[in-house]
Amino acid sequence: MTDTTQDIRWIQRFENLHSVFKRLQEAINVHQQMPDNELIKMAVVKAFEMTFELSWKTMKDFLVYNGIDVKLPRDIIKQAFANDMIEDGQLWIDMLENRNLMTHTYDEERANEAIQHICKEYFQGLAQLHQYLLDRLA
Image 1 (tube, rainbow, N blue to C red):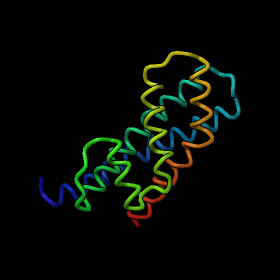
Image 2: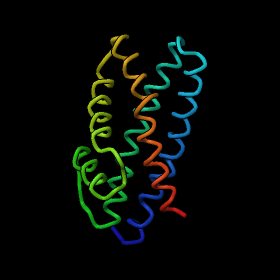
Image 3: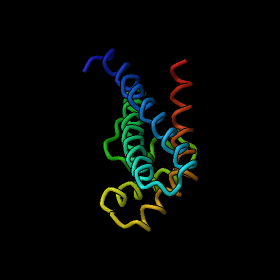
């Protein structure tokens, strides 16, 4: 892979992340207006899953761009924390673990619990990374 390709790979991935991040933000806003709507709850969970997935992949690309080669999501999160990309490494590990649970959970109580985490905690961590990357584009 050429240096130019690596230079723009994280930027291209971030463009996709930026788009799904905005969808997550919209889903959370609608959920706050209609907290009992099951379709909106599903939208929040799915938007979170997509945003989280693109977030760690964008972190990976950004780390590679900066000469740090990591492969696994947990290792990427640790390196992102060590390099000040994210402020709360434990929050991101929690997101990783809960995202894995959400993917395989169809229990309404667990889904509601996950939505609470997404709206009250996880969104802030995702927003902080989003802003960090936006600042790198400026």
